[in-house]
Length: 408
Image 1: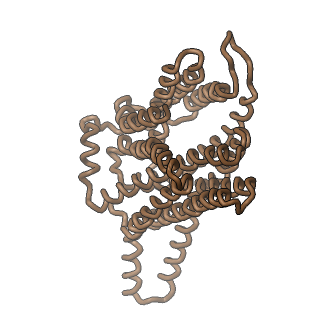
Image 2: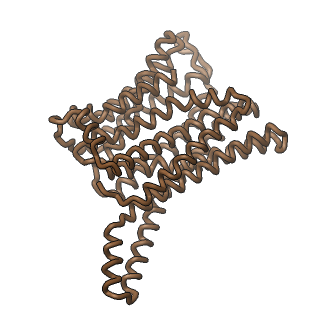
Image 3: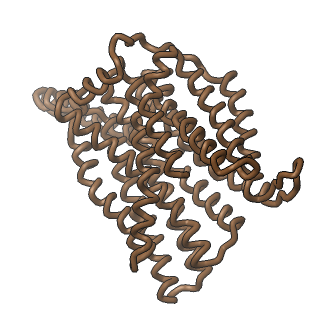
């Protein structure tokens, strides 16, 4: 059922930009998707009183609603053209998602104590949190109607979605390779996130016998600490960009010859400090996620060999989750912002959601791959280790992006 939800999310994310352009409004499509989220979660909650098909239908509707996350990328790039502001808004969006993912654990814990009947249907710890979530989504929907801007969508209906794809793949080789690297990085960030979500209950429940409420607290701590990545990402980029500009100004004014000044100015004009620093931050995010994954493997191996008490292994594992989430949030904030620099403004509404679609692919394939690896004799360690291998393969690609001058 989770796989069906992810598959629907991918499909809808690929066409949601096209739908928004056809409707002529990004705002109202986002609002409609949030309404679908309310319907899907409510139907999913009622599934026990109806049938398994109702649960499946709820997951399918929720999968379609999840495309709102992909359309947010189009919305942010539509309300402002300032690149630094786009990065800041994407980071705020990622930070907010992390904070509310953490707060959601309180809802799970609080409503987990429910145990009563409504006209013969039992409301308990299994369905009460999703009932509560569905009505919270309904409240958010009303707020979005009031708060969201309604940016104009450019009229490009003479060019279909296939034309936008053709234009994307018809770009210069360097630009196309850069875009494919960025899409791969977005897939990787989603894969890393799923790795955390998949292995956390396996390790904390099967190996440590931690209860659901304790797990909820652990995830809450990990997500809160992880949001520091997206919160500080724009500040770090701004600080480094400002420092680089100040350094260049000092060098130019330091008494070098006129010829050296001209050479220095040409070099400065060919550089894009904001772009370079965002790529550098993405590289840092990959390294941070590797450290977190190493912590997760270390905790598993320490417990397996009895070299650390179970409680200490659990704390060590949660620390690894937190560090991994830190890297994920930085990467998930930087990659869409960099990707938006390469996309032609005429097809941006249609193609920006592809970032969310690729993230959905990670959500779809990660549990399948991780489950297969976990069932080997190496267990959790090889599953997390595979994620580290993917990160390692991605490092040279991001370094390649760093060395290339942005040339759209």
